[in-house]
Length: 309
Picture 1 (tube, rainbow, N blue to C red):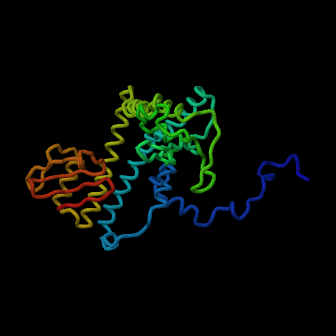
Picture 2 (cartoon, rainbow, N blue to C red):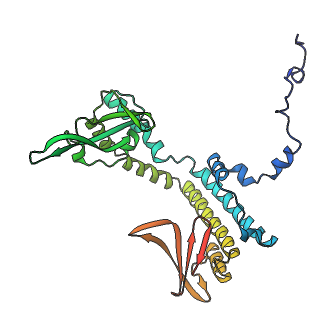
């Protein structure tokens, strides 16, 4: 029988072996770097899933060289964590669009469908001969309702008769197998709703409000953390590239000068120009090209890698 006058410590359930901290718990806790402790769960999971392999260039480096690389990457990860926390409130387009679509379906058509698991299946008739005799149908598109809401349907695609009357809604009952869904919602109604909502345009407004808030202090903080993260990532990439001999010491010095704020960088006394990379008029956001006097091209990538030719 429990003593009613016993203290909380006396009445507490005894700790099991699993609850007892291990003899190395304090050492392990003290060995975990701050940037890993502070990282968001998504970032820690990504690090956990990343393949671990020490490269030869690191194994053969001197202690001083390793220290420079370690410090560069630790600073980069710490800066990235601050940026991650600033951007954590930013919704991706799926998270932004889902409640808008669900509400619109309920308000407009009084239907409640799982917008991720319910698919719209669009079909076209297969006609043969001069008289266009319909002999069958074929599927032209099958998308979850949420992705359909993000699809740019043309006005003529939303008209009655554009898609075959057998078009409708399905759910995946088993991998690769779909069964029909009975609902009062029609395909034409959904397509017109997707076009009217124009979620892509709404998301652009949301992004602009988030990335360019009216509060100048918030703008300054976001800009500072983004620039600091990019500078730290470039510094880490430069440390690794120098150790791998992908760039020369003068390239390394030029990169550090740019990180330090140099507006007119030079290599061997010759000016360096920076250009964004692009392909077929499409700007690439994962690299930067540095050209020095038409004799050397350095590719600066955001994935912590540099090379020079």
